[in-house]
Image (cartoon, rainbow, N blue to C red; front, top):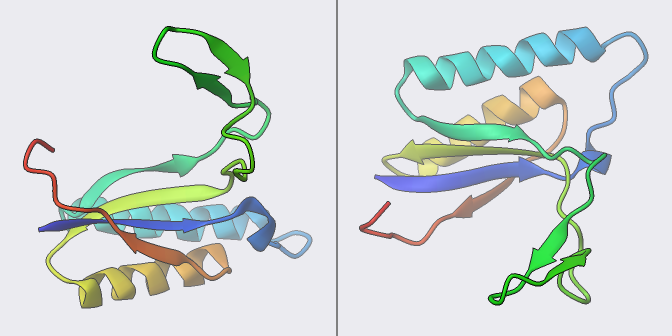
Length: 113
């Protein structure tokens, strides 16, 4: 099976006033569905209140990220699925729950993972 990254940038999620709890409930329901189906690997949102650091091979720590690279934010879900079609179906469920489009990416196969 292949692992897929389903994600969205923080600014894509625009929730109308008073609907935050409904979005939280619906998104948690989709994640619970994925867990029950045995396809859930990992998910969560980037804590945008904590800035990234770049750690070099010698242990040097620099505030920020790679020059010219956009700092990732938003939400991420990793699912392990039998096909791209199945991944599109799950991405659509997450899009409905979060009320914003989702980007779908496929991880390269790694026999060690």
